[in-house]
Image 1 (spheres, protein in one colour):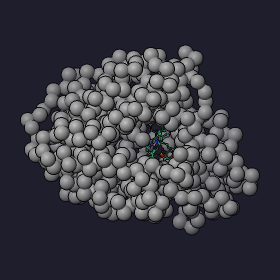
Image 2 (cartoon, rainbow, N blue to C red):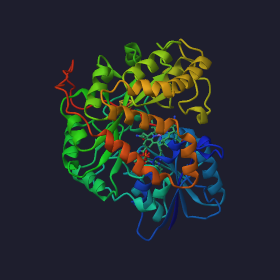
Image 3 (cartoon, rainbow, N blue to C red):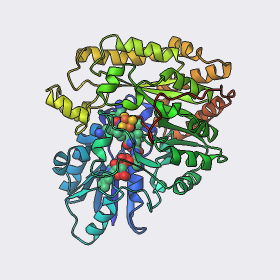
Image 4 (cartoon, rainbow, N blue to C red):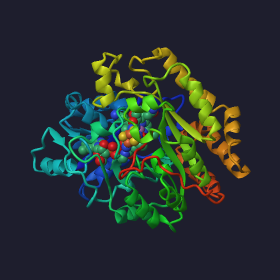
Length: 478
Ligand code: B12
Ligand code: SF4
């Protein structure tokens, strides 16, 4: 059987003028995971439109397309193209799960939720000649998964070819997050067996790893065993975690000792009413500054995530947030405009309040305002968002942020890392076009490794105001 798997790109990623590095960061891990379930004699190709031009003149037996909200229109066009040629088309992923009726118009089979249980069932049905039109995931486990088909990934096209996910979902339920909508009908947070995760890590070449888990520290017992197992593997790694998990004594130290060098942390807002509104309770009453100090003390850089446009945000939110982030010595910040993804609690609330402006999914990219904000105009929100990026990544701000660190080595790393991401975009553009993204990996590793040469941890056992019940909260990457 000839199978073609496609990760379609959103328009911006195809621009002939300028391609931001972020679209050449990570390979399509979800599709490579599904490819693992195919037979050895199946002929499979995996194309990622973010980094290569698609060949659309072929005639595979089966086309598999992963659909994100921002690439939905492109995904549907590709699906229609292949169906017109008589090819069987399977659509799955986050957006299909949110809006199955919409996706079903462009597919022979659609898949709701994670694919580890439904995909092998479909393959058996398809081979037996009676595939169903809808498959809904209900069994949630990562045990017994076949190996991810990393051989299908064109490693040289990516800055971070070693992305890895050892869990799915998150133990928290923030209203704006994709998670509850995607994992409905089954468990919404589960991990691999530690040994399986360690085995996958051991098979990855080189030093650097990027964990794409929503919340790698979400299950403290699993995380502690994983970090213990990773000690001595000489890895340098990046991941996402929450303020709450950073403040917990012990786990972060283990993470740093096993090679953690930067953490994406979902601060989201400095306003506690906003946190309440979004049910991001795990961030409430947490000392954000203490979390950052703890990370820096352990030599871990901070990628802070902030969301603008929650109901308490007014015109002052942009400058206040940026100023705070610079003063804290945060190395990189990711700003988002609040975006109600279909089927989330936030979407339903906005819809009930009549605040949604349109359903042009291309613009649901966290850079456009797609709803009516409470205390801002859409124009003010969008321009404030862009201003925040400009202000945070000004050279003067980078230098000032670097000054928040105690040692010269750390200050230099701050400048190199922050400047490298945001001030060298034309250089990244050239490198991407030359298909040499992966050749920059040693540079990234050098910056991460050097930053890891840190001073001893201050006596810093921070008391949590209310000890967490079991596991943690988390991030919203991208
Ligand atoms: C890595 C990542 C990126 C990377 C690369 C994406 C890639 N190569 O896949 C980059 C940096 C490019 C990126 C960019 C963006 N991202 Co992004 N990203 C992620 C992240 C962190 C991990 C994705 C991943 O690898 N997951 C692990 C794999 C194993 O899971 P999976 O891909 O979902 O695949 C499984 C299932 O979905 C399912 N499945 C998927 N397709 C199919 C098809 C079939 C037939 C079947 C059976 C099953 C199936 O089975 C797979 C195995 O279980 C997610 C968060 C998350 N946890 O998913 C956000 C996330 C997907 N991103 C998001 C967003 C909003 C964006 C951006 C718009 C952000 C921005 N402001 O620029 C852009 C645009 C993306 C685009 N091209 O359209 C949102 C998507 C919301 C939505 N409803 O679609 C997420 C969920 C983040 C969030 N919390 O809001 N992203
Ligand atoms: S903590 Fe992060 S990943 Fe978890 S539900 Fe909230 S936003 Fe989503």
